[in-house]
Image (cartoon, rainbow, N blue to C red; front, side):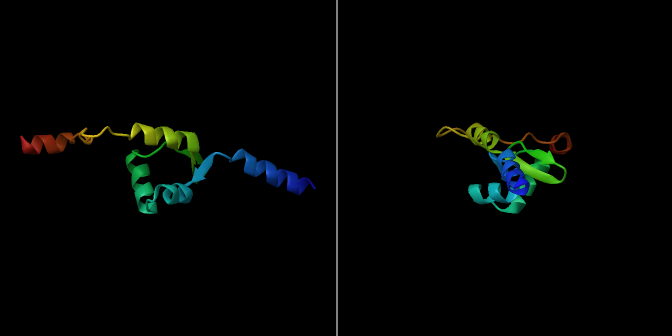
Length: 89
C-alpha cells in the first residue's frame, strides 16, 4: 500500500510540468528546435532537476504570450554581434 501512495504522490509533484518531448509535441516543433532554444536561451524558462529538463506549463503559456505580435508589427531581430558590426563598417 505504501508503494501505491508514494507513486501517486510522485506524479502529483510534477503536475503542471512538461518534458522536453511533451513541449516539442505540443508546439509542433522538433527536438532540435528545443535544443536550439536552450542553447540560445530564447525559449521558455526551464527547470533543471539533475539532468532532467522540465518546463512549467504556466511559464510556457507566459512565454507564448510574450511572443505574440500584433498584425503589421515587424519581427524582432537579434542585435548584431560587435565583430559583425566592425567588419561591415
